[in-house]
Length: 251
Length: 282
Image 1 (tube, chains in turn brown, blue):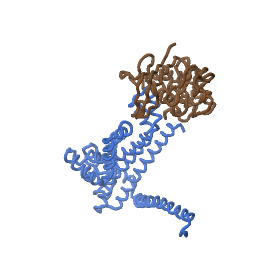
Image 2 (cartoon, chains in turn yellow, red):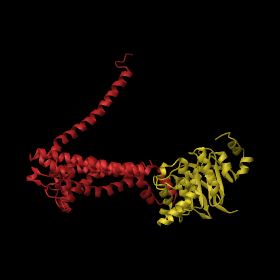
Image 3 (tube, rainbow over the protein chains, first blue to last red):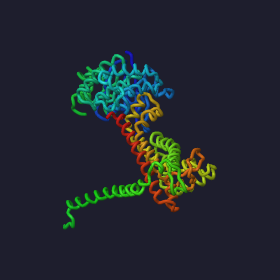
Image 4 (cartoon, rainbow over the protein chains, first blue to last red):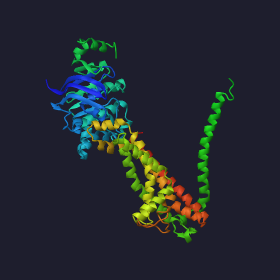
């Protein structure tokens, strides 16, 4: 089995508060892994550890190892800018920049030094097509992204992430602010993207986890209770707490 | 318990009081501007706007004063804008909450409350005499820059601070550096607020007489070089009125000054509106 990400004995603290306890998880290449669990269980903190977004928080401390393709991403020699180029992120609330649709997608390429107009145009079109948004926006690329609907904005954010050609895409409850139709579109998109990207998705929606993921990890109070194939976790969980959670007895 | 006024009536009375305060404020503004325009507009014609003053301003026009005003204000903003916006970005984006930051903020607030005549005195001692710039556009402009600085800084800091944090997160998550994020995402989003700050600073600088009284000279000719003396509109107004040269022309000058500020404000606001609409996709 080929692993893209290997997390071993990860502990994360904010000040004195321990948010993740001895978490170990292996994430396979080009597959969707769902992280489920009640609010405050550490799922978001976990994925934000994978692209070092937690570094922005002053009180963040961690120990343990996080390997991406075998390399420790917390090694002091690692350039966090390169890491984030390889590990993209889609946020809970769509957050396109207050710029044109074109500029939103071109932004990541531009900050990584691409300024050739033809290359940008081509990459923007390619990324928007990959994010299943091209047909809806191809005639208004110069219009502000903030004029799009929530679902379109979220697909734009996915396009923006794809444009810089990451290996991994982290999705932090990408549909929680969206209506059911937009949600379906995003899920279809995830199915399409999984052959090229390793996707890790945090979700509160059990059905969504079963629909989109091959693997699932169940978080509770900062620990992974159980992880494995999604089918197994949802059909015959080995831990009582997992069963209670997926059958809706708590959380 | 017997109330003198029932809560219902108290509510009605207070509503009228607040309404009256609002109306009174706008009335005061209208009366002042109306009075100035009423007295000043009859003096204004093409010769007044584009002519040179004759006999110390008793007759002729105020073209050199209009040029002086625009010139010193431009110099002031040229210096104060990068400084103020730069400090604001540092405070809002880079600095945490520490003693240096508190010192900068306290310094800026104190600077804002210093009377303008003190700025004038400092400008005279420092720019005119110590740095040897003499009575000039440069000395006056730099003195005005010091005055406009805290206004620009405060407004810019608030607007940079209030840029949606999710924009920065999105940018950093794409692998942009902090500086790229600030320069390409945060500052463009904060631009309307920053511009408003610059306009407020401009209004403060262009309307100032005391701060330039000792620094810019009082020449009646059009200033060309930075080291030429000049006579901006407020200073001309002050001299013409206090020395009893011509009260009519004082009103005319005042009206031109008011309209100049009005034009600059309206034009910038229109451009800003367009920018915001484009950015927000409305």
